[in-house]
Picture 1: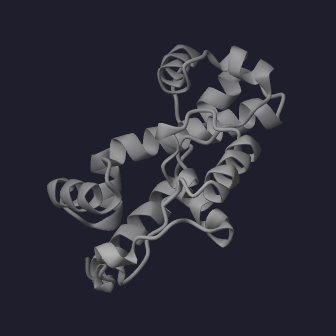
Picture 2: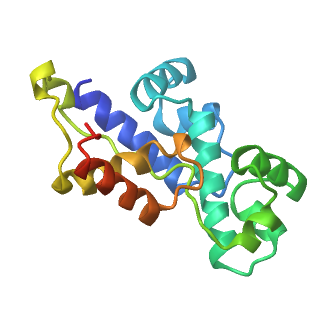
Length: 178
């Protein structure tokens, strides 16, 4: 991916992040960044790995989860702040993603982000890897490994980072981590 594409998608992500409290549809975002919705959909999906709709929903629900855990605002207020038109539509979307209703999630007081702000890295395509580059993980790899886990949190719902980190270090010591 060229730097021009990265710059364009960064502008799209900036727009989305600055408007998470509103109704963000593909058409609205495309108009705001002056793209056809078809081109934007293709470019965003190819670059980020998910549709704009999925990214927006996951970001809004992550912000909602944060508010549920770290504030005492009523659920209806959180729903409206995060771009939902009703508590019912918010609760349905929240439960579908977090596997528990908002009130139950709040009671647990354990924030788990579904989607953090997507960050693009320039010139990654210039890096070539071979089989010889694969090696056993070392303890100094743990911070990078944990950053990767935060990017792919779908596969690790409600991951306890301290517990995961301890198990990772154990696996590294036993030479079971690449």
